[in-house]
Image (cartoon, rainbow, N blue to C red; front, side, top):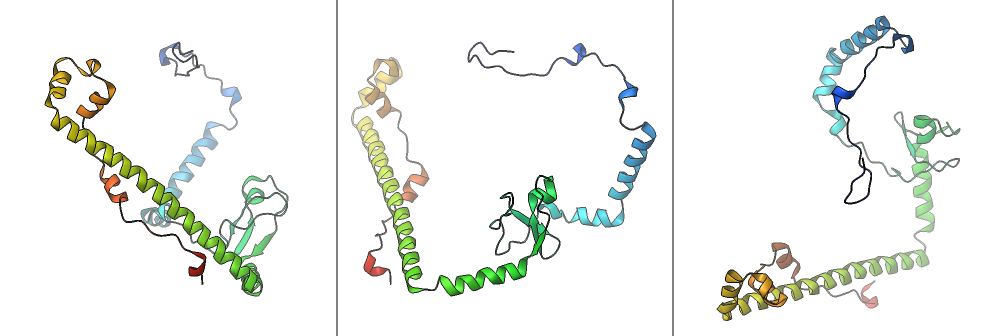
Length: 221
């Protein structure tokens, strides 16, 4: 149906009493005998001792082990991420899980990690690389501190405005009388806002902590 207020189409379930249900057994993929046999087999597996103990541990709620290259290695054929296959192997997740990639080869995780770590030791410890890393790190730290300073300034302005509104209402009681008798529609928006005193949230007070100075280049070493 179409919503007259928004003009968008909205779907909803039909009344079950309006549904026409008709049995068409000739369209079944498998017969009842095979279906019931499979369901009985699934039930016996679910209720077996080993499966019962495993489900009692709720293993699906536990996080998988994180490795050095988790989520960072991609397939050279399709670009999908490599997923853990077996104990110490990585393989294309699209090829193994979806069948949309032809690269079904696996690679051992430990030799790949050794190769990458050796490359990092040989190249990233060069003086020019270290200098570039330090500069980028401190630029990111200073960016976060600038954002914190801007957020703190906004909270300070909000707190000052709320404090002014509260003091203004206390000093002029006639405004409260007008608001109660005539309603906020008879008052200017500024006065109506002053009457409805809004206290600053605890988060606003927690942000108003002393600022942290940005790191200067001479502090990088």
